[in-house]
Image (cartoon, rainbow, N blue to C red; front, side, top):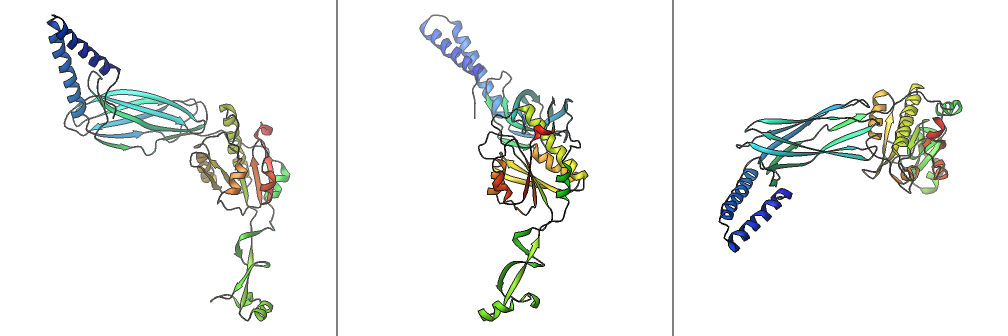
Length: 363
């Protein structure tokens, strides 16, 4: 709890000087000054500690914003206590999670007994990204602003405090041979799961109840003196993974926005070609690789919202390396690696066909 500020420290210093003046000089008016300062301090403590003990704070924000157009945000502070709040300071922090940029605003308001007051302000963003609005600090002060205390009972509702500024998405020219390869039949089998294709053997194990008799491996059964069955292979559909590399040596706002626009355009173009796919990237806020399946427009924009909700960061480890080292399943036959750095391409190619897409080549 931060009680004092510059004003209160000034009052305390003035009180000390007045006391010294009273005891070491014959200035009788110093006694009146001492009484006045003590009265101010006492009243400040009383009003700060007795008021604003029970506050409820809620926030209303639009879900989606338009770049360059102010979005209205309303913060409602409700005083449930018996005493009025003479002064309440609300400090709000606004962060563009994609651009890693932060802005801070401080507002002051008074609230009557059993009443509420609003803090209204506009948020404007010229770039794509997710603006997260958080209540960084709420303090109750006396009318002179000498004493700052945190409300004893503070109920904060911050759900839905994000405004999404979506990137620009349009058809982007994808090489026709790539589009054809993403849409052809795959002959790759899963190394992790069994299936029903008898042309490929996934594993051989002991017979279990309800196993198909047609799957018995008769030659091995005769050698092992126990029934052995074949687990057949699982053909992998021609599934496509788009890996977005968010590792940049020197993240630049213009470049980040253009790269994000490209990813949105790429995903929309694939979807318009009836090519379902998955988009994945390393989330530097959660420190994990995350992936989103895209099979319609709703799932596309869900994925893009998640994409713009975490930043680009300087990182020596590429997105491909994060993907390989993650628990994300790797049953994809093709990969599009969106990056300006081809590092880890060879490792990624061991999981399927890889196409390197540098966003700069599509501008």
